[in-house]
Length: 465
Image (tube, rainbow, N blue to C red; front, side):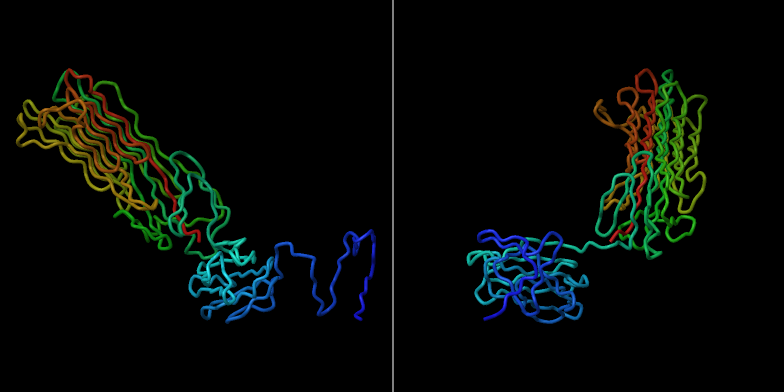
């Protein structure tokens, strides 16, 4: 008869036998097994035996499986109610070489007599045998390992992801706070798009239908696409020029998002310039205001130049102050002919504002002062256009013109439309695009006022896994 040894019995009452007191471990001798105690839903992990080839699992055990050298098959034990096994990816290789979990003969896995395939890096699963109908059932499935990240860890703005990249979007002032820099120095060079506020359009003169406001210049646009953050950048990608690169460290970076230039009600005044946007060492200049008709004002200079009014005047200079690649283009000039006037379009990030050329009515030799086009980038994960110039005001064009029509188009990227005197108002630049506002009309109509520019935006992108 085998000998039963009990080191300590605290209490025996009826059929209840209590072994050990509080804090006392009860240990089975070498080679002994237990029955009737049940399990707590956990396994004993076999850390001393990493599996690299086909093996048969044992009830109550968990296995780390290394598939770096090739695919591995784990055979499940014979099913018995309450049996439990676990498997975990040892080196994040299941995505390259899968682990196949094979049922025992006619046993089932989740009701099917089919093998289970683990093919996600870092995956781990726990299976419990329930009965002959469902067989082995998954009670826990993790798609990745929890591990210390070697990449940038940061907060601030609105956070989204695209592939392996994290994106912080600031539509107003904020702070990009880096709590941990990446281990690899190359991953600390971040991608960014910094767009300043667009300018408002110039105002027209109610005493003259040929004195029209020029379109507002777009806010300056600057971008860098770091090699570790793949996406389709705009043509203005400034990498790898050293002055354009931003390498982050574990610190806080205040973010400034420039506001759009305000609408200017006073008769004949230039539009208001947009405000600068700033991230680290990168500053994008606000757009130049559209030219007003008071004494034939030229368009203002800025990230992109404001356009001239519907008189013979020049548009403002873009890329002011100068950077490379250029952050914006010049505004268009304005002109008029008897019975017809057209103000110039505001400069955009992608091209100059179109000159406004007056001509007879109906139009023949005339051309409209369309806003200069902006540029498109996929830094947020989808193509978005920014920094279009505002359209200039006009008093002549194809007929009929209804109040619902926006007449002289702004540039793609949020540029507002210019007014048509006397029936169509100018429209504002789109918020958070840096678009310039449309130029105002002239004459007796109520639409002399140039519209406001659109606010800017700051976007930061980096690799996070």
